[in-house]
Structures are given as structure tokens and as C-alpha cells.
Image (cartoon, rainbow, N blue to C red; front, side):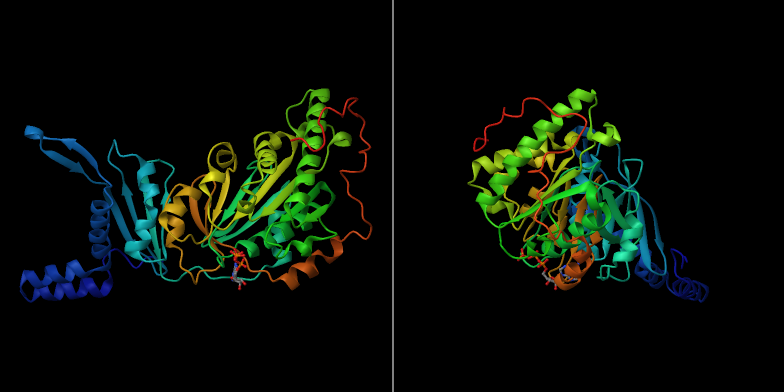
Length: 412
Ligand SMILES: Nc1ncnc2c1ncn2[C@@H]1O[C@H](COP(=O)(O)OP(=O)(O)OP(=O)(O)O)[C@@H](O)[C@H]1O
């Protein structure tokens, strides 16, 4: 419900002052104090401080500035909205990069959204902050129904956020210690396991040796050190070679286009604290290779790290990790490495599980909370009671490649 740009009380006060012939200065003072006017002034200051204007030369070479045009400021019961349009020549990316500044000026509940028309933006200042909430397996199960490889991210004020890994393949989670990465990984993997069943083969590598043990006997393999991960990477490399041959044999470009009887399961490799593998060149090369060719072959990555490490994220791997979840970052520089803007540094320490999701633009999302005990209970029905590792078992498919020895074990 709209309360109107000029609040009722404010308008009444304004009229009273004007009607009584009260000094116009007082009326001006009241007008300036109206919520929408305060927002307009603060926005103009923000454009100035943030250099969000188009600079051009005027008469006698004088520098002139063309600022964004504030089209409206509307005060609703639960939020205040301000819409503005950029002047021609000002790059919208420059504004998106400085989205953190809107939170700094208007508080933690301010969010910036880019309109369909690239030059229009809407900033919302909500009255309440996004609340944390518990993982509800039944509801989330309903939400993700029908999605091939669903990643349930969390909630914004306008509803649930989820996506299909098949369309947006490789994911990076980054954030400082205690920001909520492990809980998010737990929730994402629990949802994947529960919704995909046999169409998913999960491999987990926990470099911190902290909690992936809950996926033992559910995932195909859970390893806690570099040597174990090295073996998995080698297996996946062989599997990718097989799948490449399979696509070639059926003359299709993606595993989803294979006939049903010959379609392999999706593979997800989740690595917690990948930065600890920085010196393991073989493993990092293997991970980079998956990020490059895995998509069409149905092999996907979920990587997490505390500090976004520029060495690891430089180059190919960073470009291939198309979806990023940036939990609280220590500073703007780190946040820029992860999502290309400083927004993740504006997340407060108390906002556990809050992230900036970079997927077709950036948005703030609150992830659900799930305890280790609850995850263990939800995974119980999916436990294998024998020790079958499917990549070791020959697949019974219609097509079996003849030459499978072209990749030497031990050499990546
Ligand atoms: N979505 C959430 N909702 C509410 N509380 C959360 C959420 N996520 C995390 N927390 C709280 O924050 C604490 C730390 O979270 P978590 O262990 O996931 O951090 P982390 O980023 O993995 O830290 P580290 O890198 O040190 O392992 C949790 O024990 C939990 O109490």
C-alpha cells in the first residue's frame, strides 16, 4: 500500500503553515524534511561522491556533469523505492560496481536493482532486514521439482531463488570465516541429493576435514586430503573422455541430448576450501579442465574458499565459475575479486548466511539454516549400505568406447 510521496501528516502541516501565512521558510523546511525529499537529496549526494555522472566539456572547456535523473521516490508501508535513469554515456556497470555505496548511505536494507532497460535502476530501502530461516525439506523439495540439477540458494524479499546447474554450470562460494559457507554447502548438497536420486553422482573433498563426513555412504566418494582428491580428479578425467566419445558416437553436443538408455548420471565434484590446493598443480589443472569442458559432459564443480585467492581465481577457472555466492567479505578488494563489485563487504558480521548471488546480475539472498543433525537425518534414506563406487563399475550402456587407455593414470 502506498503512503504517497508526500506523507499525509507532512502535507497537512505544509498547508497549515502556508494557510496561516506562516513564513515560507518554515514551509520549505518542512518540505525538505519529508521522507521522499530526504531520499532525493541523499541520492544526489551519493551520485556526486560515487562519481556517478557523465562528464563533458561545456563553454570554454568548462567541465559539466550530467547526473542521473531521479524519476520518482515512493514511500510504501514496508519500503521506500527510488527510481532513477542514467544519462546517455554513463556505463550502467559503473553504477552496479558501486552498489555497496547505496548500502553505506541508506543502510543495510537498501538494495539496488537494474531495470530491463539497462539505464534504469530502482533502489529499495526496506523497513525490516531479511530474516534467517530454517531449511524446510518438504517446501524446498516442491520448489525444485522438475529441475535437472537444482541449486536452492535461498530467499529474497520477493521469494525463493533457485537455478539449474545444467544451465549455469560451475559454482564458487566465498566468504570470511563464520559467514555461512559450510551451512550453504550443506543445504545445497542436501537438496541435490534428495531431489536427484540416481541421476546424480556426488564426489566430496573436504580440505578442512570439518564436515563432509555427513555425505559418506551417500556420495560416491568423500575424501579429506589432496591425495584422495587427486584420485577423484583422475577418475573424472577418464570419465570425461568416455563421455566425450559417447557424445561423438551419438553425434550430439550435450549429455542431455543422449538417448535415455545411454544417458549417464550428472556428476558434481564439491571441494571445500579449494585455496589449500593452491600448490597442487596437477589437481588444479584437473579442476580447471572440468571447468572448461565439464558442462557439455554433465560434470560440474562446486568450489568454496574463505579468502578469494587471486592466484587461483585468475584466468580460465575464474571465468568458468559462472555462478558466485559471495558471503561476507573482509573488504571491498576481496569482494571485487569474487563478484567484481564491493557489495559483499557491506554484509554485516551478524548477517549469517547472507550472500550476494552473482547470476545474471547481483542480488542479496538469505540462505536457509540447516544443522548437521538435520542434514544427517534428511540424508539417511539415501545412504548406500554397500560400498559401490559407480565410476569403478563398468557402465552397462549400449555404447562402450573401444580404446579407454589413452589417459595414463597418475599423469594429469
Ligand atoms: N543461513 C544461516 N542462517 C542462520 N545462521 C547461519 C546460517 N549460516 C550460518 N549460520 C551460523 O553461522 C555459523 C557459521 O557458519 P559456517 O560454519 O557455515 O561458516 P563458514 O563460512 O563455513 O566458516 P569457516 O570458513 O570458518 O568454516 C553457523 O554455526 C551458524 O550458527
